[in-house]
Image (tube, rainbow, N blue to C red; front, top):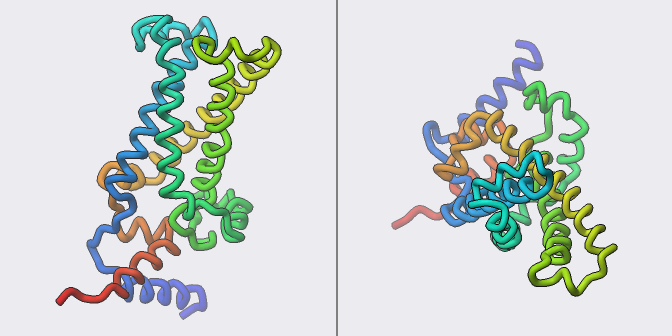
Length: 233
């Protein structure tokens, strides 16, 4: 038997030793899933209402909100709702989104990522480097969107700021919104691309095989914790 075949057999034996066949692994609790979908809904509505006001060619999107005045009224509140909902989600998930040396190696091997050669990549924890970068973009973009949004919120705050600052805030707000929308599109595409990922945010669980393939370090962590838990009397 070749050395490579021996390594494959060793990995298979390792998997059988810790993998309870057919078991589902909890990836997200009901609280986390609810929070995620609140952020997602608020983001979609805020993005659509913002795009409606961004360019005349997209003004037809305002019909989704009852017309231009309603769109202008609702957009800031939708943005606030998204910020507040994500703040709670960030508290729940921030510890698992810290970059590690393995994450930087994962990014350098992006060709293996896009070609699905995950066996060549370092073992991934609960989130891979791509997911952590999405989290980082959101963490950086939302506070900027909040501050600039308050500056240009004419009904309540715009009168307190000079016109040049308001114009600068509009530009920065649009740039951050573009970056955030682009990032979320990639995030959604990746979730659909990796089969089984959507189930994690609808049912809260993933198969053990999915966890082993895509997030092996996390799989080892949760299975070890489960086996270390004392048996009930």
